[in-house]
Length: 278
Image 1 (cartoon, rainbow, N blue to C red):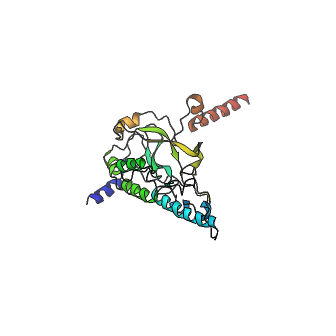
Image 2 (image 1 turned 45 degrees about the horizontal axis):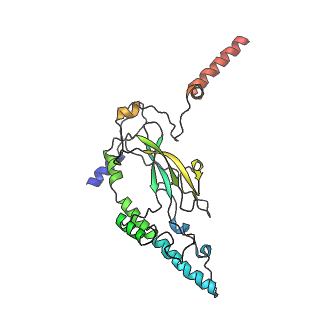
């Protein structure tokens, strides 16, 4: 019954208020260009193949050693996402996953589209900070492999906070601008083989070191991490100084002459001036 009420509320329409063009105060399910369910990144496809890590069929001692190192590589890939022993040191072993921004369908009070930052690369805290600190004391890397990453994903999926905030919040968010890393741990924002793009609007990504970053407007929070929402009147009265894509609006004459009514007015004046000349 509770789930039914939630679904009804999420799909109900809200009358237009003031100059707003909104059908609901809740975030609408608008794809951000990377698919309804998020990034198309597939860790199975992103995992390095045996030939890529130097494993091949052969009967020489080097082939045997490389085969053993290959077993260690995939063991660490599943558990740690990083070399855990001298056997895998120096191998191209990094956590699988991709970080990206996903559009919420909600507008910020300044006029920009609001985004959510999705952390697809494991952070190593699947089993808690106590285990994480113990692993560090033992000289082992954090648990950022495929298995711990699945636990982190499950924890995030079962976290009711985003749904509760959407249901109980005003629907008129105050936003903040952030610049965060996007792409995978290897510095890719698209599949190196197929060219499939993993992030939205890849043309806005900027190279930073060995990876990429994007600048987006996201939900602002207070010191306790709670989302900051506005009343409807506060949201409407806030100055809309940014375009939906997050770029700042042009000011003054340069902005005025780009408006349709200004262009039409200038054209009429030109026609009248031409008539007087003739």
